[in-house]
Structure formats: C-alpha cells, structure tokens
Length: 310
Image (cartoon, rainbow, N blue to C red; front, side):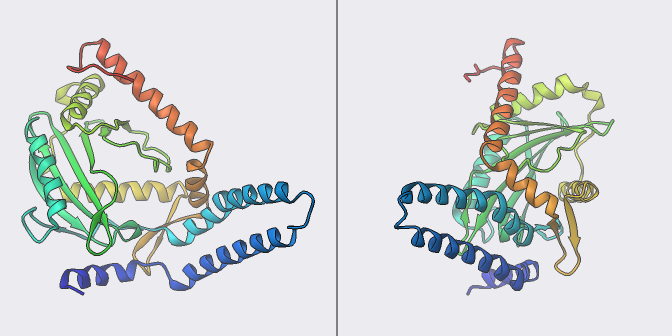
C-alpha cells in the first residue's frame, strides 16, 4: 500500500459505520433472499407455479426497494462533516486523468471571466468517496463557481461526471445556484431561500449564461454579495448551516463517536422512497418541465445566444 493509500485509509477508518451494524443488515438481506428461494422451491409443483414465481419476484423486488433499502440506508449511510479538506495543485501528486479534468474546466471558466482561487481534496467523504474540488471566482459578476470530481477505489477512478455549480448570494440572504446535473438526490427539503436550477449540459459557458440571466431577473447587481475571500471556509460554513437545518427538520442526527451526520429513520425512508418508481420518475419529470419552461422563457426574452431544443 502506498503512502497516499495509507493516508486515505487512516482518515476514512474512524468514519466507517460500526461493523456490527453492517453485518446485521447484510445477514437480514441474506435471510430474506434465502426465504424467497425456499418459497419458490417448495411451490415448484403447484399448478400456479408460474404465477407464484412471478408474484414472488415482484414481491421480493418491492420489499427490497421499499423496506430493506431504507433499513440499509439508515445504518450504512453517513455524511462527513466538511472539515477534512486539504489544498493541492493540479500538478501535484494527483492522478493524471483527474488533473486533466480540472485543467479543462479551468480553461473553460477562464473564458467567461472566472479565475481559480483554490483546489482542495476531501478524503473519507460520504460513502468513502474522495472528492477533488476547485473554487473559482468572477469578481465583476460577484459569482462563485465550484467544481468537483468524485472518485473511489485504489487507484482512484472518477465516478459520474464532473459536477459544476455557479452560485450568487444576495444581501437579503437569498441565493441562486445553477448546477450542470440533475440531482436525483434532491431528497432533503430544499432550502427556502435558494433558487436552484438544474441544467444537464456539458458546456460551462452555456450554463453560466443561463445562471447570469436568472440572477439578473432575481435582483439588481448592487444587491449581490461580493465573493468571499476564503471560498473553502465559506463552503464549509454553508455545509454546516445546511446540516443544522436538516437536523432541525428531523432528517439528520450527529454521531459524535464517528464525527459524522447520519440519517434518521424519517430521512432513510424518504430518501429511498423518493427515488423509487413511480415517485422518482414523476419528480424528475416535473423538474425537467420546470427547467424547459425556464429556458424557453429566457430564449423568448433574447437572453440566450443559443437555441434551446427540448
């Protein structure tokens, strides 16, 4: 094991869920699967064998997704406190494929007036992911941009696409945030003071153009707050405020032993159920319709230099 791998392991170790809790969930899942197999086996001679088999499979799937999955989430899911970040430069000992992604996003953002302020790495995050992040600022537009590459395994391999978010804050405490991904995990109550726009598009320039248009509609330029001098501390403070809000709403509780936040039963059930069919499909469809309506409205007002095709 390399020094870097040992460092990641040491940092992640105190954050892992108790092994006993893990094995309780694993054993319960195995017992349920064994019971389902035995049920099918002993009904093999029934004249309604095919119907029983079909109903059994559907029943197993439904019970797993709607009952076992929330139980697994309650015991196995955790959220790291945002206090484990280390600064780095893309040229440091960072995997080449990750460094290239950061440099490519940096070049794209430079074209729309952003400059990179800091890059930082967070080990032992939710699900033992390693996050490589970078913060950018556009002083003239008073806008922050943050990108993140989530990685897992040894060697580290990216999971999913590069996340990019633009954020502008205002004097009245409200915010506008524009993300380049659909967030299936928008499972917690949304922050009332934050207007979030989800745009699954790969072009940072197009994404920022939409963000700037929404910001202009939201408030005047003089009402915007200047970009913070310490983006890392600013993001960490935002995360802590968000965790506090979710704790007050009964979605999270703080586990002092492992120094992490864990979901309550209420959160575990809702997080799973909101993503399952048909609830998840309905929620995603509603979000896409809202985004499409917004883009059509901006296009009709001449605030986009490109044509929106739904």
